[in-house]
Image 1 (cartoon, rainbow, N blue to C red):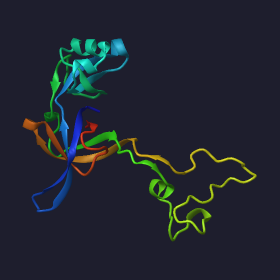
Image 2: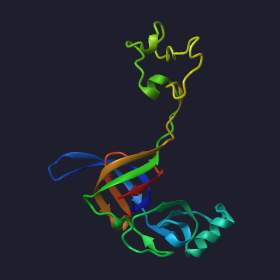
Image 3: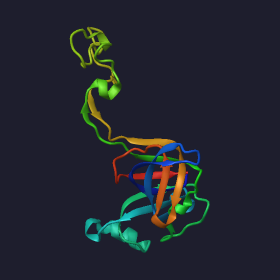
Length: 205
């Protein structure tokens, strides 16, 4: 699917023509520079690589600087490959937020907020207080029995237990594009998208 790289600015809400208040997310989408063109003959598939958000040359490796120099651009912080563009692009071309139109639906992928080490109630929705899940009788938020006895004498893989929560790659599908502000490179989509403020996201048609 074709798309762009963007940066999550934050959430707000707008009113539609019927006066309904709609929660939405503002994303700075592009401008993205074409930093590489994949072809069937050379790479075995067709795609274009886009770079977004400038960074200082001193913070980039020499290999990366050479890669971006071929495209005639400065070093970029985020680089992602996309497929399915209708237009033909060449090295150094710029794609802006005008790639999207109001009213269409997009998929947004990002890294969810990291929550740190969490227990089973917060992480997996165990009952805890009142429901006393998994056989516990005198503790409020403990996991309770995990099923192991003399047989199978081990804990099965995938057992829902306490651990690191968040920081996962998450895709939210079918978000409606409410506004495209071309002069400021802003895209306003209905609903929420994964990640903290200023987190990088990919927006796909």
